Image 1 (cartoon, rainbow, N blue to C red):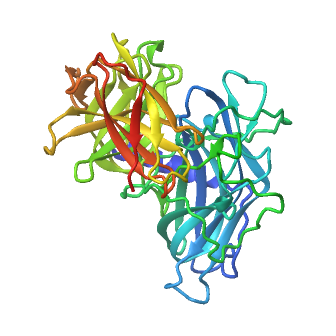
Image 2 (image 1 turned 90 degrees about the horizontal axis):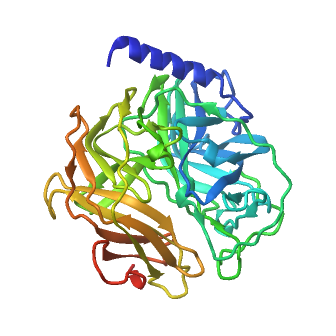
Image 3 (image 1 turned 135 degrees about the vertical axis):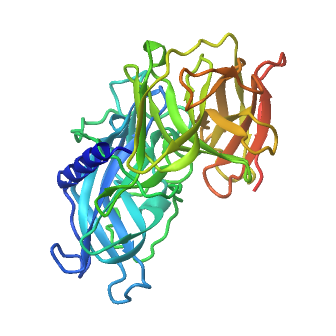
Length: 469
């Protein structure tokens, strides 16, 4: 990368760090500002797109706790905290296309750290959604009682003396809200919305961001437990939508240097507005597709930022009613900005089919909520090196019914190498043929798959995805 560009990025990153102190507080006997052998942790928040049905997705953040590894120093092992006082209610949908919001900074003793805990508010108005069809009211979301001590985000990192580490919490609203049938609609008092700051800095260590596991564990965490009633876990007994947060931790700055990359682009007209643009990685060994970063096209433009460094990403553009576009061979380096990438226009699909049915959990007593994904092999062959498998669409099932419906094009995807210009698009393999993969959102639910042919003549309204552990 040219030196001038890298210097510009670094300057932006350092300037942004100086401006994101927020309402951070410090816990722990050794975590004092200015102490020798101390470094700085900065935490930010960003979001991937939610479904068009949602006009707003609010979460209330009370604190972020950080655990020091006991192997470093038994005397100083324990928890330190960033406390947001007052708690901050955030509309996640304002944090898209490279926009981030600072949650605070924390002075930490030099050493290794094992995990973070994101503690959300538990009040009836703390975590809510607003439907696009009913923009005048907020609908409360139920939060599983097991999360009252916070979301456990496993992400080991090390802080050196005088160093700065910045972590971005990528909160995927689309995969975090589970509908449970007809929601209970309660008019709520308006809550001031925190302003977001634009994330100009390029950010993340050369490691793949891990999808963090949400579990409950008291573990000696220094957090305040809610004093009010705790919502129930059962979607059957609670008509409210369910918040099951899906969060990825992306390291964005390490020792003052950019540690992740970014990709940005545009379209020629408004045909792509509302489409999702994502970077995806396929693992042929496990036959799984990981969506590393996703955003939504707004005013013909999109930005994926931050992105964990990696080679061989697929850039996937998907919009209901249109042909899928796949650009292969996207390499993202730490500190590098790719783009703007001009992508022309989206083609309207000639044929669409609804893949609908029910998800049947492995354990009949488990909830029926699951993430249902439509996967398509658009290049290569079964087991072949260089297979290109992408996620075309995804949705969560209602916890009460397990019902799902995805509208999928029968047309072949448009596929081209990312590096070629002008791009020579070809028709992708397996036109209209998909694998519907359902992953339960808890261990008891299990997962399952079923094939679906959007070009077939048979009715598609009775698909059943049978889960196994």
